[in-house]
Image: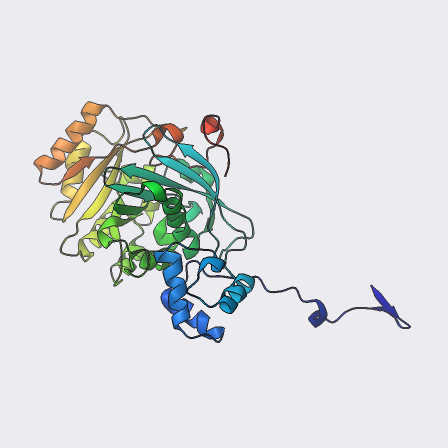
Length: 381
């Protein structure tokens, strides 16, 4: 503290203002990066070069972006950042899948909570392709009774950069062994249509041929049935495929499993699906988690067939994955009978056994569980 003859001198704030936080660039669109470049006094095409570096080349160190002049790289290093989620731990499944426990920055631009958040992403390699299951929220507010993520509650929405960052981390981590095709599914933590703007901003970059460059055929958004979000999505020029989590054959059953059904009951949900504009190559996907003795009976299958009659749709039947919840896996014979009933009624149906069950990476198991499997997994990065 400095003193004068009148007492202590309190400095004017302008004397000691802390430097502003670096501006976060990950998740910004091509137009936003062009505008950012112009704001620095640079030509707009410098923003396009940044866009190409981030999303096409997966280069995140300004010093290595040699297409940019050295003074600009130095300025970017001082005034901007590209913040990927940090890998806290990897859980490797016997089937080759990897569940990533990822920490998010507390300083992410647009984040709506002051505390750091932890999320999960699953990388699933297969013959000729890899599928990356990503989160759109930390936790989830929808509270589906059969899903362990619901036990977390909603922590916060993710930014577009945090959503994209999961894909970029998974691709970079596995760069030496990537197959030709990448699928992305918005089926991790959270309800994508309750974080609509960030989810769609990330999707546009994923599907941009000059961005990450994925095909709309290979990117799927799964919703619990948020009708306003479905209606908003059907007006998007660039959009992923749509999957609707059905999981029941009548309102009483669905409300018991999915409280969101009280707000968006089956009749209104199916009506929204009938009005949804499908592309020529596209079918709606309905996901149906089979719970032993609860929703896996022949009469359930017949009711599902009536609900979906006339829709250009397919059904993915997902035997429930074990967790600390009061349900049980269905019998294989019941799963097959359910599928046969749908097929007999001209509804394509497929049985999807989830990957990564042994490391809690399967559908409905993402709940930040560490202790039960950590002993056999790699140390934090």
